[in-house]
Image: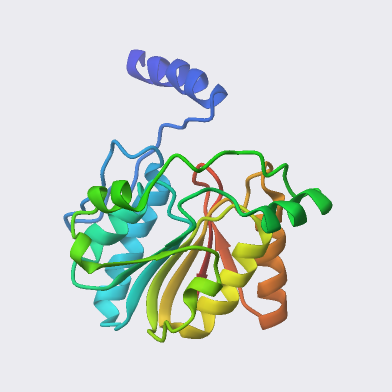
Length: 223
């Protein structure tokens, strides 16, 4: 009874601040590698499960992240797919003015957040297998010209409407059957263009998505 009472009190305190005490895959015997120090356990744990599904299905193809910033999530993509090419698409200088203009005009976001405090060198320094990385620095989708690979996993984390919509248009046709696209910020009210972009693309292509309750509400598309 005392333990249950303490758990209830602690739970209320955590819940108030957006944190929840819960079990996770308590009955799965397979050994998993999920960094508990990563700021978003649900997102990273879901990535690990998707990787396992891809491996069990024997899918072939490269992996990618569009919107790398400092490489904190790309690091785990590189770790979980050590033998696959990882494309890193980013300006590495923050938001593009042409994308911010559309955000403001449509009241999607202010576009004011600064993501320029990064560099290709710092990102590659974080990668466990930098030799598997191909950096595509600049404005997407211009930087995708000449990329003809198929993909088994793609993370889209650009925050803004245009690069998310353009990312889906580029990657989905190149996604292997059974492959995954994770779109970050789908349920982030600070970047409502993310949801608009995903919903529009899914409606146009009659695609079903799954939304998970990670920190920013990632939308997942499985081909």
